[in-house]
Structures are given as structure tokens and as C-alpha cells.
Amino acid sequence: MPHESKLIALIAVGFVLALAFGFLAARVRLPPLVGYLVAGIAIGPFTPGFVADSDLASELAEIGVILLMFGVGLHFSIATLLRVRNIALPGAVAQITVATAIGAGLSRWWGWDLSAGLVFGLALSVASTVVLLRALEQRNELGTEQGHIAVGWLIVEDLVTVLALVFLPALAAGGGSDARALLTELGMTSLKVAVFVALMLVGGRRIVPWILHQVTRAGSRELFTLAVLAIALGIAYGSAHLFDVSFALGAFFAGVVLAETELSHQAAENSLPLQDAFAVMFFVSVGMLFDPSVVIERPLELLGVLFVIVVGKSVAAFAIVLAFGYPVRTALTISASLAQIGEFSFILAALGVGLGLLPQEGRDLILAGALLSITFNPFAFGMIAPMTRWLDRHPRVTALLERRNRRLPPAPAGAQAVGLRNHAVIVGYGRVGSVVGHALEAQGLRFAVVETHQRIVEELREQQRVAIQGDASAAGVLDLAAIEHARLLVIASPDGFQARRILELARERNPRIAIVVRTHSSSELAYLIGQGVDRAVMGELELALEMTDYALRSLGVSEERSKMVTQWLRTQEISRPK
Image (cartoon, rainbow, N blue to C red; front, side, top):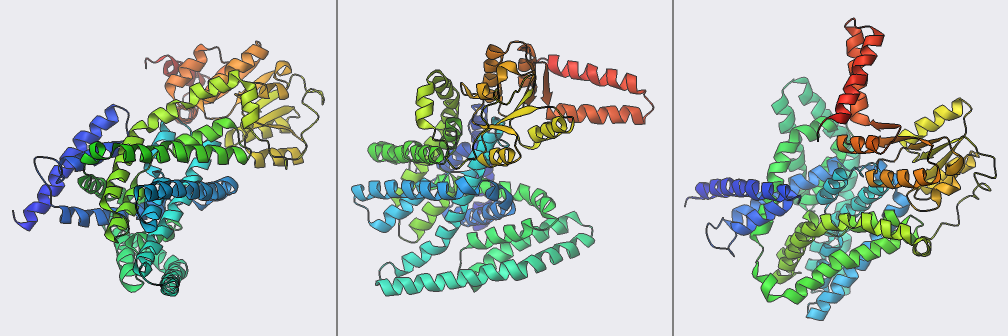
């Protein structure tokens, strides 16, 4: 078959099978990524039938890596990382160290050398950002505190992986030399990286925005998209050839620089289809490298890999989060978030094999571990609710696990001791809860806040407000806010399961309390209304109703009539069959 036909066959068959298996994975509530890997296995050399060209697949995979890393840099959020830096930075570094040590120790037991063990352990220590974001979005936890911590944690893991991609070639080059040669190689690599980063942060931050603004003036969408891709691929290629750093690092910093421009959102939107397409080919090419026989020939080794991913990482993260004084539910969420590996593990494994640091069976075990851990990850998240309910029934176990931070400012003598009666209790003092609190304060109305975030609690107590640090869904926490004497409960936390549990606890202690709840889905909205909640507010619905009200009144409809229409729409949305 001519070379051109091989390329077309690879892309055509790869995309068709990726669509088919990705769709099947989505239908059974698994990430489509699992289907893409299975598609690669189907056209790989280890399964019968059509076998795609592995050399061409590796070239397309390299483009996929570049665009994946460019996307990571483009969405890199310094603000998110800084918001949770006190837990995400030390927590992620500690968890990576523990998981890498366990993986390296396991591989040494198998007879591998230290360099192979370090690459192997590091590949098992980093979770998939793609899988995590999908899981958090499905559970409406992306905007919660535990969601912010999990995303910040993954950002730190991504940065560690980027550094590993830089220094692994240096370690491979100096691996057979003495310590002085190795240090020299690492020093030269560090110098080249430092020069490249300095040029990108100083020169790139000026040149890249200027180029995009010039292209934007032409008024051509395709030219703008071409400019974004040219910047990503050009910087990645130039960094590799001029500074001898990886394509991945160059693409990552291209995205970071572009993210600081006002055109970053447009750049992300225009480049997303091509990113998605080549990302699919990357996962397909990774699947082609997988030898399914490893599952039969090395079952004990595979169980060891799953132990590191699902148990070792999760237990380490659970202990670390609790050690920082966070609630058990937050620790459980972070643990479930990290109980899988994905795209960065594949990149590290491919680089390790290419440099001769990792044996091919190590790559096969990593791929098998990724497939199984991603498949089982929804079940890990599903265990959070029953484990939380069990802990609610055993408060002594919860008290034993949770270690409150003693650096907190002293709490008020108690909500009841300061005479709180007929007050409001606000659960969650983020962007929504704080607005409610400011409004109540402006009207001279008293309220107590229940919040899990330590910094927010500290600030509220410094302002002499009643603030309780803890998970309001845990037994006894609402009592600290004198829930039995409260007149109103505002559940501003976006966590649906937590809201249901808080609702149950509040009704037990104060059956006549008025309750308003924040929610994100129509089904949850209908459920809460059915449970007797006085008001459930869905952000998207209220936004649509507010815009409808303005549209009707702008077109001459009376204010009274407009309010009747919006109220009717609200009722229709709540009662609509799901």
C-alpha cells in the first residue's frame, strides 16, 4: 500500500473505530477516552485484522502531544492554583513522592533497575485531568471547594510532569556516566530550559499578542485559527531544535503565553476541534502499543499496578488532606479524583521506552492500569455517598479522622451564647453565599456561616461574624449554628448530595425552618421542591427567566403580565417530565 494510502487508512479507520468505541463507552457512562484506547488496540499489531502503520501513528501522536500540552497551557489557571496553594502544592508533591516510591519499590521487586522504577512510579502517580474534569462536571462539583482543590492538585501534577519530560532525556544521557557527568548534563539542561522560559515570558508575552492582534485585523477566522496553530507548533518545534527541550514543554509555554492575552478564549475555541481530533489519534496510537496478553501473562504485576493507582495514591491523598485539617468528605473526593491515570502517564511511558529507561512490559502494564482504573473511576466516586452516610452514623470515627487546625482564630463562644435567635444560617460562603450574607448584613439581619474553607472562616471571624468551620452535612455541625432557633437556612453549596443531607438534618432539628437551596439541574430542582423546600434556585433557569422578563418588558408587555409569564415558565420547568 502506498505511503499516502497508509496515512489515509490510519486516519479513516482510526476515527471510525474511535467514534464507535467512544460512543459505546459514553453510553455505559465511561469516559470516551476508554473507547479511543480500545480502538487503538483493535488496529494494533497484537490483534487480528487490519493493522495500521505504527510509524505514522507515532508521528500523529507527537502532534497530539503538542496540541494536548498546548491546551493544558492555554487553560492553565494560576488563580485556581493560588486559591488552593496551601493544600494543592504540598499535597500533590507529597502524594507524587509516595506513589512514585511505591511504584519504584514494586518494580525493584520485579527486578527492574532504579531508573525504570522511577519512570514507572512517576507514570502511576499522576492522574488524568481529562477524566477528573468530566467526573467533577457530571457531579456538579467543579465549583465546590473540593473541586477547586482537586483541579489545583492536578495542575501541580501537570507541572511536575512537564519538568519530568524535560529532565528525563538528561538523566538518560548521563545515566551511564559518573556523577559529575550526570550533574553536568542536568546543569546544561536546566540552563537551556531557563533561557527558553525567560525568552517566552519576556519576549513571547510581547510578540505573541502582537502577532494575534495583527492577524485579527485581517478579519479572517481561518487566518486566526492558522495563527494559533502556527504559534503552538512553531514554538514547540523551535524550542526542541534551538534549546534541545521537549516538544511538550515548548507547546505548554506557548499555551501559557497565549492564555494571558485577551484573545485566549477565541484561540481556545478555534483550535479546539483540531486539538480534539489529534488528541483522539494520540489515544488511538497509545492503544496500538498495548499488548493485551500482558493481562494473562502478568496478572499479579497488573494487580500490583492497580493497587498503586487505586489504593496507594488514594490512601496517601486521603491522609494528606485530613492532615491539613479538611473534612472527611473533601478527603474522599480528592482520593476518588486521583484513583486513575491517563494522558500524562502515556506520555511519560512512551518517553521512558523511547529513551531506553523503561522496558516495554512497563508500558503495557501502565496502559492496562490506565484502562482499568479509568473504567473503575466512576465506581470510586459512587462510593463517596455511602461512605459519607456511614460516617454520619459513626460520629466518633469522623471525629477521630478529622484533625481541626489549631491555628484557627478562636471561635465565638457559641451561636446560642451570643443570643442568635430567628437568624439565618448560610451554608457555603463563596460567590453565592457571600452575596446573601452582604445583603443580610446591610439590612442589620444576623446570620451564621457554615464553611469548610479555612481562609474564609478566618476572615469572617476576624470581622467578628459567627462562622463555623466544618461540613454542614456532618452530624452536629448545624447545631453549632443554632439551627433549631434559626428562621432561615440558605444552602449555597453547589454539591447536590450534600444539599440533600443538609436538608434532612435541618428538618430534623427545626421542622418549620424556611429553606432556600442552590441547584444545577432540573431533576435536582424537581426533587428539592418535592421534598418541601421553600425555594430551589437553578442558576441557568433564573438567568433565562431574568432575560425573558427583560425581553417581554422591552417589547411592551406590562410588568405584572411579564412576572406572570416568568412564574408560569418556572412552574413548567419544575414539573416538566425528566
